[in-house]
Length: 260
Image (cartoon, rainbow, N blue to C red; front, side, top):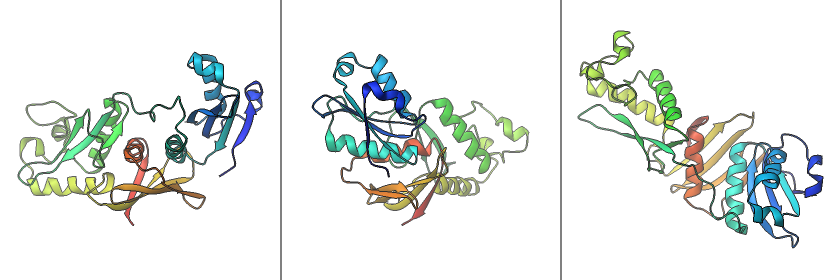
């Protein structure tokens, strides 16, 4: 990780384009007013200076940034810095507005299914910025594991689903497939894409960059995160925010869960 780079607000055009990282807004007493992250630091800081909160804009005298290696690393690092420095304009770590959570319910006596929820931010769920994105994800994994769209709530029907007519569904929607057989595939899906009750595991992401980000979870809390073979960080200010960030990225990028 590079050291923090500083520049005055009238030198912003000297900042390189498309810097991914965490940035800091300072007043004339070198106090941190705000900490943020962006995939384009220069563009984001310009937005603060041109259309941000006017009282904060009037106080900004200096900018700093630290170049990072992945979006996940940036967001986790930002979360830790906000808790450490408590800037006056970071009243809370930014959260999703009206998120949709994809969770699941398993059963022995009926077909297991996924659920769309408004408030279920735990390790068994995946966060999405919209229900449309959650449905697209569910459709993709449904195809992969041959799950029924009617049972998963994607398709509304009082009879069989459309895929049953195409012979892509084995008839769970009309009780033709054995419950145990269907649930075995469902459980395989859960094992691959969801937290399965483990208190200790490593999750890794392949995001838009080539670097692989990861987080180590012990006793259901994130203890470490970083970018493989480049940089690692210990979590000194643990909270639910780290799990929330992981759930968000599970909804955005391909990921893998492995035992510690």
